[in-house]
Length: 152
Image 1 (cartoon, rainbow, N blue to C red):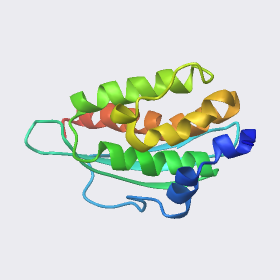
Image 2 (image 1 turned 90 degrees about the vertical axis):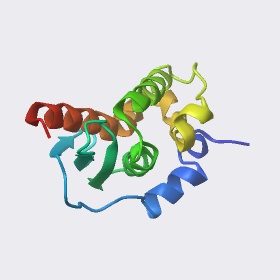
Image 3 (image 1 turned 60 degrees about the horizontal axis):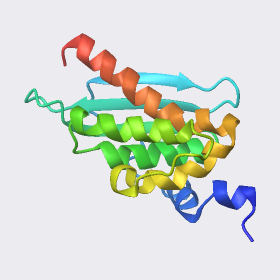
Image 4 (image 1 turned 135 degrees about the horizontal axis):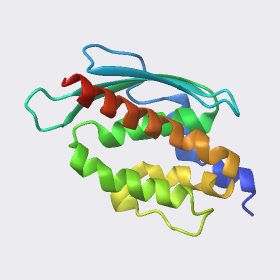
């Protein structure tokens, strides 16, 4: 029988938390942002590097995440999903993940679209955890806005 916590902390979430992908702040980077979830204390410093060819392709996302397993796993999954894609390719991924996370479990995740992000959707039934999952994604959005403003 599945418990609420087992739906939240899937094996994939635990794996991304223990062995995060793309963790550690790297150079070069176009922008750096720092976000804090004041409710639970999760923090992320995220660096974004876009391609220099004008295609708005994500060359790198690196980060330092401190907090709960859900926020750290979300940062790992997000970075792995986004690196190598263009901003235009990422928009439907992010929109779908945000819609599913805010649905309180009423929207199933499209694994073809959000990949390992489906492992995060157990948090949709726990409103306090939705912010934990979405914090890295909001940091990515802020870094993208900053990068565009700098013209990098």
